[in-house]
Length: 412
Image (cartoon, rainbow, N blue to C red):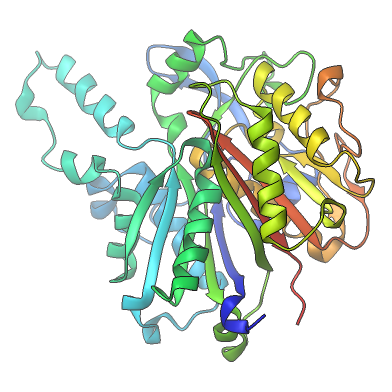
């Protein structure tokens, strides 16, 4: 394939509940260090949640942070970290050919809840409503804040794709590069979900909100005693380039994007459809020109809910039933569910496997649900398997959106 048609990852910037860069994040995953803690949530008291502890003012002033959003601050941090990691000569980059494409779950809830709360503390005085409300809550805000911060004049938008957002943002970046619309894509997913009480209340009403006296044990994907989702925030943004451009500037290459797929269940608002998930994985594998035996690792979406885990386990068993070499892991035991950031963060956590040959384990699965048994499942202890060439990353969301993304260890 022509190098202009090969898309590679040359920079990664992230913040997660258990790490603020790829090195810290990977170390936490290998050591089974959770980032989930107890936090006070407005109206709901003490709840388990994953909050990020990055420096919001590393790349933006306090004045602009006050004007912007939590999601925007996460995006700005991750984008700047990715640009720095890619060792781009940013001053000489044509900013009109840079695009920002970020997957999100929801946006604007944090600011809206806070403003309504302040009104109720002050006799419903609507004059307290912020003049910054509109630009804070429009759906393109997180990506737009990145363009303002980095003086990017190319296209920017967010992709509302629920918890498939992290994968969907990356896929959009790939497609825009292949179309020639941009020369650099800053893409991935972000979420501020754990900053808003509404999502906690909604999952609690559904009986799907995780709880445990030890918060580090609250997120228990595939475990027989799992009781729901540990809500988290986070972000991961990648620098994507055409291989020809990356080679020209001598860039470090983390991985090559080889295949992807997005489809829809069209069956239920929240309950997943394993048949459609199988179709999505197989479509991504076909697009990559591979067969199932060539996939070395599958990172499951694995939220820690009853129906979600069982349906996905069924799908992975079906999709890879004839493959003895495909290993399976998951990440949300370590970080909770980072919603729109989940797919991009979880992919990043597995990319170092190309270098060290180690698969990080799924965490907190002490009593595996028999309905979630999968061949070559890596849980609780890292596994050294040696050469890893292809990783498939699953990321699914409400309203039945499914995504699968395949990355390859880079070779000339």
